[in-house]
Each structure stands twice: as C-alpha cells, then as structure tokens.
Length: 111
Image 1 (cartoon, rainbow, N blue to C red):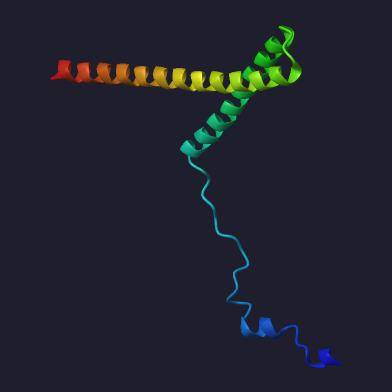
Image 2 (image 1 turned 90 degrees about the horizontal axis):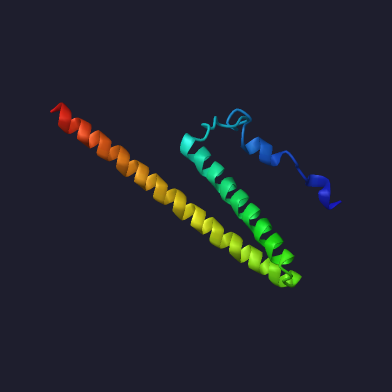
C-alpha cells in the first residue's frame, strides 16, 4: 500500500511540454580539412597494414620463427610508415617552396 500515493506524472507536470525541445539542432557537415584528416588517418592504417604483411611474409619465407617474424614485421611496418610520412612531408614542403619561389619571381617580373 506504499504506492497508493505514487504519482508517476509529477515530473511531467513541473515541466510543460511546450518548453521541452523535441528536435535536434542542425549540425553543420564537417569541413574539408576534417575530411582530409579522416582520409589521411585511414591511409596511414592502410600503409602500415600492407607494409607489415609484406615484411612478415618476407621474414617467414626467410625461415624466421613465427613470433619473431610477426614482431619484426610490425616493427618494420612502423618504420616503413614513418619513412613514408617523412618522404611525403619532404616532397610537400619542396613543392610548396618551389611554388612560392615561382610566385615570388613572377611578382618581381611584373613590377
């Protein structure tokens, strides 16, 4: 008999239905830079996976024990990923520097 005075709608009465929000706010789609970051993240995972599998296959075919081959393959995949990232970063900076050099020389020739 303790539930005789139980009022389940007591909370609803204190907050009228008009004041509650029943919809979600519009979310602006992610910008191009966020999309690029997502693509680069998955590209890094792909590069690491491919390099790890190839290195593990090579180590296994050379007759290395299985556990050592997998550990060496993972380490080789990490080093390969870092080398790939450094190479891409170096090429990007070189291209950017070259582009700035061309734009600076064109500005000088126009003046």
